[in-house]
Length: 434
Ligand SMILES: NC(=O)c1ccc[n+]([C@@H]2O[C@H](COP(=O)([O-])OP(=O)(O)OC[C@H]3O[C@@H](n4cnc5c(N)ncnc54)[C@H](O)[C@@H]3O)[C@@H](O)[C@H]2O)c1
Ligand SMILES: O=c1ccn([C@@H]2O[C@H](COP(=O)(O)OP(=O)(O)O[C@H]3O[C@H](CO)[C@@H](O)[C@H](O)[C@H]3O)[C@@H](O)[C@H]2O)c(=O)[nH]1
Image (cartoon, rainbow, N blue to C red; front, top):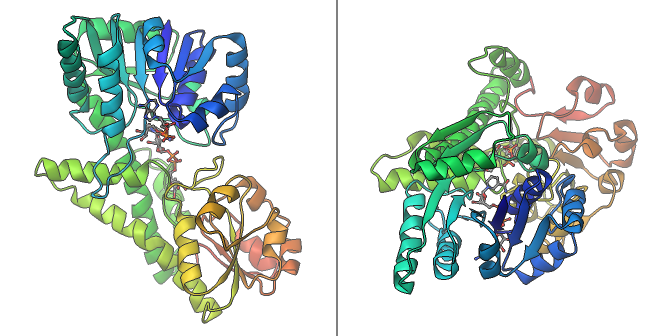
């Protein structure tokens, strides 16, 4: 099938590459000249394992065209995926200006029948609104071109984006006409995965509900971790025991310095705003956010208690990206950690295999090391923020010899407390310090 994808970010690029890989003819449209320049040369404006190679393959094979020409793209395609950003506005509501702008552009330029698929994460009711915008533009042009609206939310995880796009563990399709359903069935006909066909409103709600539930699991466990420290219990064992109940599952029970990223923080805000709009406050989500916002400070209190005053101390952050496998620092806990440390006049050194160039733009004064050992040199303490394999597998014996004081704070419970203590570290994790 001929597919247009509008918005060349993490989701748009990965979706395009995956469709091209399945044999579809894909046109990827972006309006940011900087991103276009990168993508046209098969360069990724972000780090995501495997995507660059496949982008190159399909640009070369001619299956994937990168362009800024939406009009020509619509002419070539019959399915249009909207994958533009939906960032938070100041009040937490999802900013739909990019989605609405694309809808207007589609209505203003489409010449042939289209199935318009919203993949961006959007509040319930957006599908209906996009339909109205397109219909309004067609009326203004005095043309009658049939079109369908579909909601097909994206569930990929950064760091595993390509795998998730090629082998999604579920596909949700919200539709309101038989024609739209038939098009989506044809598009996904080679997949063995389960497809949930439902209403557009349900599909839109499923996306926010999923992210909110995952974030709730994390904050629940993080709060429990604080209690575990008080009662001389170990959160890793508590969650292991909990996770053996299939109804709970062991996934997303990893205590740490909190969740970050481009999705959970903004989507939780957006869902709360939807609740407010419809007079149904999302009280649980307020608590989830509250725990997440305070988790970094709670963890840094442990560091100050150990070091006494943080003033003029040298502290090394190991990991900056909001999770391993990405260079994304959007709402990453590392940003909060660095801000708090700089506010207390700490000398901060950081190491991350992919994200240092991004953090340098935000905090120009911090020292970015190129290896973990260089970063640890002369440090009073190290804080592990992102559990990259390059960090977890440091030669910790050697690392200890590089440090001024051997204080190790593991913000992801990624290291063996027993082994670190054996090496002579003062080791503290999250919810495991008895
Ligand atoms: N990043 C993820 O892991 C992820 C996963 C699932 C869902 N989502 C959702 O998918 C959506 C996109 O996320 P992202 O991280 O890919 O965003 P992003 O900000 O990385 O990319 C969005 C792209 O859209 C482009 N764009 C904006 N307006 C445009 C227009 N009028 N025409 C053409 N291009 C335009 C921008 O230049 C940018 O390249 C969001 O709603 C997000 O919540 C993201
Ligand atoms: O047990 C856990 C699991 C995750 N995290 C943190 O939670 C955040 C988000 O992690 P993850 O969900 O793996 O990454 P994302 O790429 O943000 O993916 C989420 O957000 C995407 C955007 O909406 C969705 O598509 C995905 O399904 C959803 O998992 C990260 O900071 C993790 O460190 C924890 O602290 N403990």
